[in-house]
Structure formats: structure tokens, C-alpha cells
Image (tube, rainbow, N blue to C red; front, top):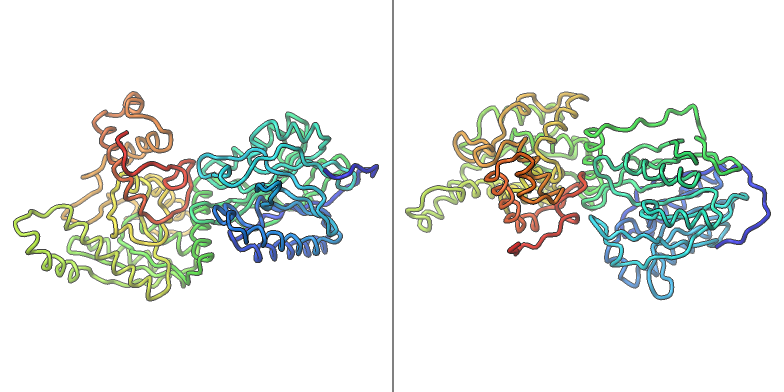
Length: 546
């Protein structure tokens, strides 16, 4: 803890720096910090606050277990200390203490580390796995800034009452909470409510800074903010953009917006926030992994239509290609609508019919299949023909292949392994079918890029004559609600039946979910937009008699 001085409090200019780091790129993330410090100092900022684990990015996972990770962090901190003349910063990084690693918020000023606070509340649920890597801290972290006592906390600490109380008991007049808080629908409202409650409990102003950007399946939405001691929102940074939020602290540590004549960003509604998250997730996955662009199969259906719009908004039309792969069962209107969307979005589109490849496979397999009636096998062969074509184009172009399956399909296994599941990233993997339609309507409010007929037609895989999804699945209004209860809320069959759903239908859906785990384990990663997505959130055994 820093030494207490007799300095009288004086106003301070604070900047919350909402950064988009790259996990593992400690040198590059350090450059972001040093550049932001130089700009802040030149603009009269005297306290700059960066997010949780800014130097490694979040979550660094088992990179933390590599000895050279700690070495690189130490080298980075030396560079940052050398760049800290005339300014104070709060920064998140991993740091070994007593032979064990801690998730630290460090305060650096004029070439010195003033105090280091170790995160106390280590989340170990959902997408979080911090107890695997860190030991919890036990002590408050408080430092003096222009005569003001400033307390530190890290992310999950603010969701627990004890760490904030401990900071207040150590004399904090203001709390700085640094975060790597991933997005899901409704999360911004939850965060602001929790932080406001902590502020009111202790009459303590709180500054909250969050990461922004996509990291594999996670998207961080930023939305950094400040509340006063009554829990009232003072200012909020934009969502889903790297940005900064400038504040003025008065002599009592009460934050005020630095530029009161600048309009505060309006909160996004659910569809807007989810769509922005999907776009950012695709953009950063492609950019951070070095892909030149993206390619996808465009069928004329709603899922691929929405995926194409997301890809174009993420990467630009010049970096996206669409491939139409009609079969003998593809309706003419499907091709017409697919070409029309590509035209509206300015995307290059190719048509590669799969008939010759499908016929060749049937001919090759005829001696093996002799006497066996046609069934789902022939449907899957068509999907796998398309997967081969798309992977070939992906390889040739150096483009990321985007799969187009939604959460409803992923849940019940309504997808072909090594067929339409083939690809590198799944933008709408966590988007239920009904939400797909709402997002398509939302995107069309800006400009009608998805033809209306795509939205109003009955969905179909078009793998056999006159096929619709409802031939194999319950209507999506019922299916999505059963899945929400079973997958996201962990309700059992009996509870879902008691809520008014037919037992036979619920049991069938539950069986489909359970037996499709092996497919999901082999699926591409995709953007998480719900509080319970398939992947890091939900880790079920493939082989199970539960």
C-alpha cells in the first residue's frame, strides 16, 4: 500500500482507456499502453486506467503456464515504467507473488510501481476458469492520487460485497474497477446495476473500465462507465469500439464528464447489441488470425443470408465471397434470392452446382449400397459435397470459411458433420432460429440487403423434394423455448412439461440435444451472445448414461 501523505485533494483528469488487446501479444499490447500514455499525457490527463490483464489479453488460458510468459510481462512492465513520467496509470497484468500467480491491478507512476492489488474473487463458472491459474489476493489495494485515496478492485471483485467494503475500510474515497467482462445479451444492464448498488452501499464513486474486442468465442463490449456515490451514471463509453472516456474528479473524488457538451452514447437495444457483437466477433477472429477475408455457402435461406450480411459488415464486401451450390432439389427462387442479396451487398458470388459430384458419389457407392433405400445418407452426401467445395475455395484464397448453422440446429444436431459444419468460424452458432429472423429484420432497417422472400419463406435444407425444417423438428417457436429451458436454464424434462409442453416433444428434443454432443465437440467456434452458449459455457461428456 502506498504511503499516506498530507497532500490536500485537488481536481484530477482521468481517462478510462477501453482497449482491444490481442491475447498473447504482450509486446504489441505494451505498445498500445505506451502510445495511449503518451497521448494522455500530452492532453493533460494525470490518471489513465487500463483493463484487466491488458498486457496478456483475456483469457490467456494456458499461456500463463509457460515460463516465458512471466518473463515477457516483466520486460513489458519495465518498458511501461520507463514511459510513465508525469502520469499515473492503473494496469492489469499477471504477476507471481510468493511463487504463485495473481491477477493484478498495478499502479505505476513516474517510473515506479506504487502498489499492486491481487484480485480476490476468482470466477470459476461459465466461461471463466481463473482458479486454474491464479491464487486469490487477501489485502486491499489503496493508493494516493492528488491527495485522494483511491481503492482498486478487479472485475469479479465488484460482484462481491467484501472486496469493496475492505477498500472502504482501508480509506478509499474512490474505487477503480478494471475488467475483462465478456458480452452476453443484457450484460451491460446487469453490470451497471451491480456497480450502482456497490456505490450506494458505501457512498463511493466507482470508475469501471472494460476490454473491447473479439477473442475466439468471446466478445468484450467495452461500455466502460462511471457512477457517483449515489450510484447515478455519470458517463458511459461506446459499446463494441476501442475508445476512451475522459472524466474530471473533483477534490472529493466525485467524477464528472470531462466534456459535458458531448452527447453520451445511447444504450443499444437487444438486437442492435447482439448484431454488433456478431460483427465484432467475426472481424476480430479473422483479423487477429491473419485471414485475408471470408467465404461462405449462400443457399437462399435465412441463416446464410444473415451470415453474409454480418461478414460484409465485419470485413467489407471486397473481402467476402459467396458460393451458390445448387442441387437437383434447390428451388429456383433460392438461387434468385441468393444472387440478389449478393448484388445488394456488393459481394462477388459464384455458382458451382453439386449435381456432378453428387452423381459421382452415388455411382461410386452403388455396389456398396445395392438394395438399400435412399435415406438421410444421400442428404448428407450433398452437404459434404458442398463442404469439399467451400474448403477448396477457402484454401485457395486464404479466406476464413464461415459456417452458417444457428443455435437451434447446433443443439439438436440438425447439421451434417464434415458437410455444412465444415469451416473455421460459426458466426451465428449461439443465435436461436427465431432470433435469426429478428436480426435479419434489424439489419434490413438500415438497408434492405436481405430479400423479403428469404425472411418470409418456410425454412428448408432442400436436400430432398418439398422438404421443410418442420418435417424433422418442432415449430421453432416451441423448439427454441424448449431448448432455452433445457440448455440455458438446466431445466429437466418434467419441469419443461409442467410449463405446458408436450412430454413426447420435450423428451425427443432432450434426446436430440444429448446425443448431438459429439457433433458439437467437432464444431467450429462461434460468437457467444447468450449467458449459456455451447462450448466453454457448457461442458458435457460425449459418452454419458445420465
